[in-house]
Figure (tube, rainbow, N blue to C red):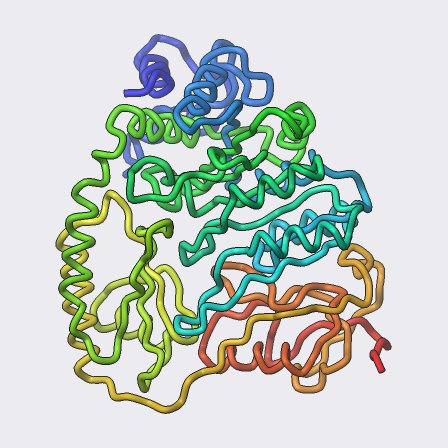
Length: 466
């Protein structure tokens, strides 16, 4: 048991009476969550302050830094989003140029908007056989840094939602030649480095700031994340300052205790936590290897084996339809669906029974499918033209128009498929025929497209690009 949890249990068992927040007073006898309420406190005397930690939270974060290989680690109780916002704010000044991957999470775009930044985009290649984005090319990073000498920070997502990492080591060397920081959104890679079959974390590969969501692939509460810092280029104090700006002033001790317990588990048991996982995962791959229409992506060395991409490309159903069948007929919930595949996230806590259920369901579905010559086109946005900065759109008059009539207009809001929340279109960008067709394909495939309502989207009023 972690020291933080032990201290919280001792507090509950003590004679100390709580005339302070939270309102449940650690006393919910009829609640299903009774044990959770018992250790949920606020920043009371003797239990440290997250933003000025000098006691048990300081020790817990130092322990986390040691386990994850960082020079400094900060607990995040508002998810990876707050880590991304704080990292960017602590590395740039208003109006700077930044080099960022076009497939970054929307939190990066929100930082661009808040700080009135000028984004220069990196475009990941498309792995066409599977309709997924690949890693960012180091050569493209080097080329863009040469073309735009005013860039102050580089921001990429690695691994992607589907588990494909970039070559962080090469990218970091290129970025550091310019004396600027590399910020890596590693939200889906908190488990990296803890087993020989996992890739190494970006913090070991030279990244200056790495943000990880514990809850995505490790046993920790939803909304818990870590921000790792490496000495050399970034200002720890500046990033920490913005954490206190963007993050709640009432951090959840329940969340922090859960993080601490998860980190102690990683330290104490290490790679043995995944020994059974790899056995049952490999059994699943063998069990589904003979399917005719459904294909399972063969994870390569250096990619994330916890992400299972199940493709129906070339069959008579879409990824969204497969997701619905798995849920409604077999009661199996997938992480997300795209036009041609569904994504499953597997972790150390998955069971052999769960994998067997998925394999049985997929094989039964496969027998009912037929081949199809129709292949939904998967277009990655290869270039974007901005009419104005994202931040400038706020002050402009806007109107809603039909998507089909939006060519050569300027977007006034984000359009993205969620999950994962990567913008197809960002405010201030000129809407092209290619973008309209891609949004229409996503809508037709039944995907959750944010920014489109009743086939309409928001554009800047009275602006048409000739």
